[in-house]
Image (tube, rainbow, N blue to C red; front, side, top):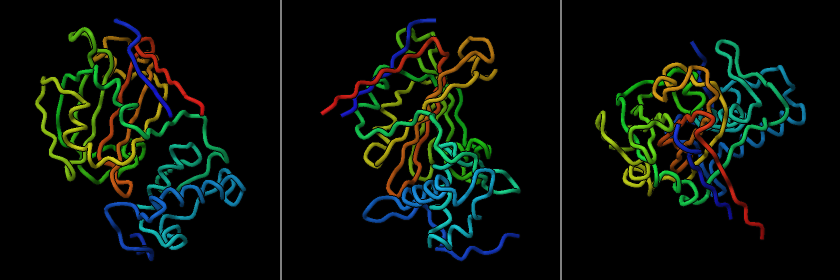
Length: 267
């Protein structure tokens, strides 16, 4: 059993693929999403040297043939390799192997919603901007979704005890094809309620990733800190059946405004 909590530290001309037809979600079978087993196979192939560091993986079309899988499934598997730091995608070149081992980046998979939503119950979001956008290619790759697809983008700040003080910036990306989320600029919303009302009964897996990065100028202005201040970033991806990404959030805290604790019960 894992129990975790978050809290603020205090105020302050391509050839045709010969694989399976394209589908909206990765293939799945009784043992789970197909992309996971493909990821594991490719990861092992990289670790054992079948695909050496600084060489290219087979093309997407070749992998479709090799695994008899859809393009979307292969993309999901490559996304997982990218998140693990084992490969990088290079436009016009291909997918290059960067390391034979997964990075030490901390990625946690959540099995129980209470673990994930404990913090969300005490946090309100003040909506700054709402629009439908197509994601920049780099962001789409990071989230593991298509850059050609439109997403509902909600730019918000997270407040805790003091409603006038921004504790964090939260960017929300919701799939408009699978939800009817409607929010107004300057309104206050609960992320917990949004998840429960629009996605709760369809979310089968949540992935959360922790990273550190300098805060960019736009977010720094929202949080009233200097640009390039050290930031603590939590990226959460909410998946439905077949590994379909329904919702993603990127929350950025100034490094001194966030603590994360976890208790692991043994036995």
